[in-house]
Amino acid sequence: MSTSPGSGDPSDATPLNPDPTGQDPSATDPAAGEKAQLQAAIFQVARAAAGRSLHEIRELLQAEFSRRGVKAPTTIWLDSVASAAFHGEPYLIDLPAALAAEAAVPAPNDGVRKRLAGRRELRQDKLPVGTFPPASAWELDSGDVTGGTPEPRPDPRAVLGNTRAVRQLLAVAASGVASLLAVAAVWAARNARHRRPGRSTAGGA
Image (cartoon, rainbow, N blue to C red; front, side, top):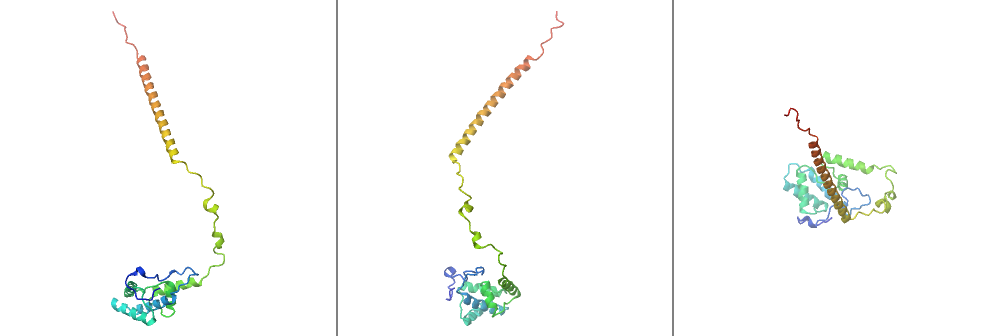
């Protein structure tokens, strides 16, 4: 974490925390002490921010940072912190820094205090041994991952050729059915003419 005054351009700013959630117990943050001082200063100013202008809150933050021997990473970050305090909410760098800062300066509102209390309880709770399987149980063999040798896929050209052949067969079959229906219709018409009764000649001279 940079200790030089920010330029307003966050493109070259160093991230405030490599593990902001604190879920990796093996992670060590070299800037933990500096962030705790920044967070304590934020808590201190947020408690006195009510009724002050944004410019006044910004100056209070800079003065408190200077008193604690730390500096804002960037001017944009400082503006965000001042804006949060202006609206009654303390800016939280991360939960580990907030927990460390609260040991020296109480959090400025009930919502943050309850959130930090819940986080503190989670840190103290430990799951029983055997809750999760050992790390070796999560390792998979190559056979488990692939399920064996994959079956070869059909050649798209062969599939296309088979499809065309099937279509041609269907077309020929449809043509044959149409011809049979036409022949059947002709025979039916002829049979109907032969079955008509002849004209009566009774009563002639």
